[in-house]
Length: 471
Ligand SMILES: *Cc1c(COP(=O)(O)O)cnc(C)c1O
Image 1 (cartoon, protein in one colour):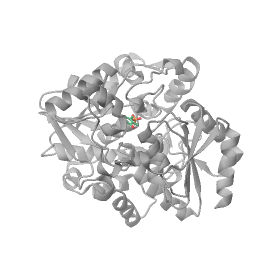
Image 2: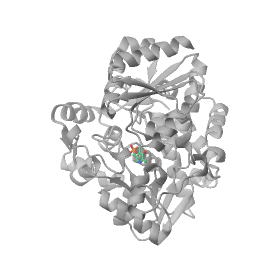
Image 3: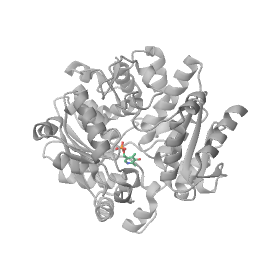
Image 4: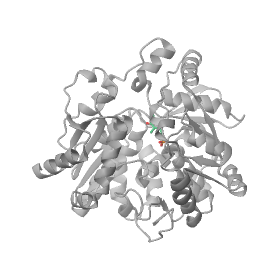
């Protein structure tokens, strides 16, 4: 399997070539040249496989340049009961007839990003060793992504992580998840500023091409194809658990921000997984809901981006969305480039033609939106009626899923985080603190390892140089 760019660069690249890359050189996103189709016989064979073995079957359709035995041991090392808490890895939790949660947040940092990031850590270590190279991952985080990346990369050979976060602005729980790591290859840098300052520093460092090349700077953001591919697996795993036979269809509702998670559902559907609807749930930052209602994709300005109680969905643009639009347009790279490069960059939005927009339905997509009041009401209602405590992001999903139920088609809502990560809203909704998994009790009291720097890219570069020189 080879990869091409959504903006027309069709130089055939293998999986391990794009593994460590962000954007394609032409500014597009990587996609496989075609989606492998899964027939009834294959689905029948996959039903009943252990999660790691299912992951191996799916990944090996997309990865031609890692020997099968190596790939199998990488996924078996990643998806273990020890790391993800259950033998199923992604067990279903019934809420009410026709509506179930798929638990994706029982990994080390209690959010679904662990599902992909844990695999990425093992893939990076493997590929860097094979090439005799090192990689310095530079990132900015306001919480979930940074901690998932650090827990995935800790102790990995050939990898250092430099993670910038806004000093004093993360919750005590989030700080503890990151700053308590004592591994030599993890560097927490608290920046005197806000999240945007952290992101600006990452951009400034990455734009210094000489520095970037010399110090081998990379990222682990959500446009990485390997992350998306790892997420395809749990759509299959959810389907097999929710159905008795491969004639049945299911729908998925996905609490969405950068469109990475639900884009994996789109890939699963393109492969032939019997998915009826892919329901895209947003919070007040409704860029995606607006698109699915109107055909207009309008990027928000900083001042228009709301800070909500489901903060991991607070986006101004959806960085993976171009992948879906490319497929929707029948893989017309010139038209994709026109929409994302010319229109979005110059006007801040694009509008599909009525004929183009009409195709959205063929891809199964619908959407909905949720607000703080909806989240609080949904958390309360789900706890009182179903006895299940859900987090704020999952609550956005459950709220929108209920509006999209179709009789006879099970609806699977992806649970993207555990409630303990967003305790304040749980207290508001239920008047009590969320349950905390045993491994996370008392983590706020652990010794912390981080440095504080002013919002200055040169200071961050100096730290990277120093740490690389020490090793
Ligand atoms: C990242 C994240 C999301 C959004 O996922 P996308 O792939 O960006 O759409 C939703 N919920 C939680 C808890 C997250 O951490």
